[in-house]
Amino acid sequence: MSVVLELRNVHRTHGVGAAAVHALRGVSLAVRAGELVAVMGPSGSGKSTLLALAGGLDRPTGGDVLVEGEPLGVLGARELARLRRRRIGYVFQDLNLLGSLTAVENVALPLELDGVGLRAARRAALAALDEVGVAGLGDRFPDQMSGGQQQRVAIARALVGERRLVLADEPTGALDSQTGEAVLQLLRRRVDAGAAGVLVTHEARHAGWADRVVFLRDGDLVDSTAPLIGVEQLLSGSGR
Amino acid sequence: MSIRHGLLALLERGQMYGYQLRAAFEESTGSTWPLNIGQVYTTLARLERDGLVRSLPESEAGQRPYEITDAGRADLTLWFATPISRADRPRDELSIKLALALTTPGVDVRAVVQTQRSATMRALQELTRLKYASDKPEDLPWRLVLDAMLFQAEAEVRWLDHCETSLVRYRPAPGRPTGHPEAVDRTDEAARR
Image (cartoon, rainbow over all chains, first blue to last red; front, side):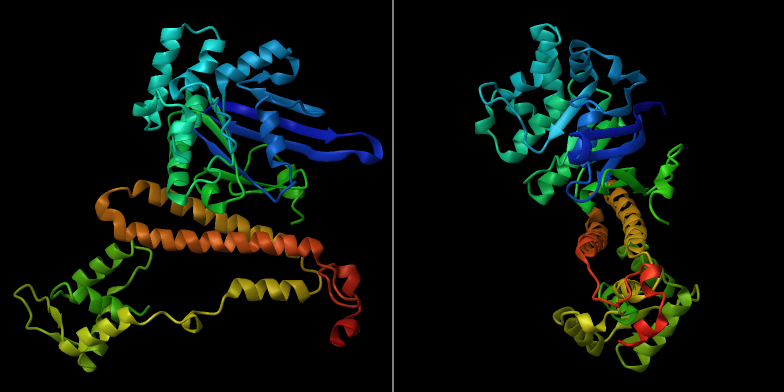
């Protein structure tokens, strides 16, 4: 399967000199189509930084991030925004649904921003809501839905269209375990259908849904549950 | 749990012979606990000796079915009514290993933690995959067995995370082995405690 997301020796440093904080120190990672990779590690190990860089929400201070072979570093702000809308889906703990829009409008929004016609965008949004099992709630506003339903809408928004890369940061948030499991099942299904997925979590139970689990510690990738090709520092950095 | 009570529970459904019992046992534990036929017959012989089951005449095919007795039923009822004592479980090798790693010179404790976490996480992935594939209503008993294993694996990873956090803050008392060879090169120092 083709590589959808690739991080090549990525560094992210905040600040300079003695005050510099190294959030990531030379991380390399490749995620293929049909593969779900979970990123685990203690607080402050660089998990969320890795996800923000993978999604083009932040830029590395060293190394390259490539999405479907395209290096994000050479893209201007406008091109980057378009790539994010078209190819990358985000699911965050904080749902970020717009309260003044209905479920279907929330899901259709990224498509409309991308120039898709109103009717086509609505049709795609309804299909995405159907995929996550809330087809009947399209006309409800966020505050008329339960937490679990809102999270499903947020996932529909991440999956709508042809997104080939889905990035999730603690996507089950404060949901109960059954609802949380349903959310992961949706993510798994989309990945099985050919997307690449990255799931940041501190819950082992959630990481269990991944094909591969990588462990971050102090900005380094120190271990993985399956051998990674071409990531030599993985084993040399683990002290074993 | 003993194989004894497992077989009694299966015989409570109706009479069965050895191979049927083995198949039913493995089915209800999703083959996570494979039994060989010898274990089944040895256990049946002991149950019969203790009056908890009785053997019936052989069928024409040469299979000897067994049935549960009233005493067996009482034993089974007692088993279901009694909680499993934590003291009856085998000692936890992992916690003992980590405790020893911490006090043994030259051992990289963080590496021990990470090696185990990776292996347990791998098991968790396998279990999740199995559970995801077992979504039919009749899979419920098997799913519950899987859930138990999932929760145990999850607890182990959480405990390992906790160990790692504790290790970061760990400052051994002066003269105490730390896992770094240079700190414990004097064996008499270790022997003092």
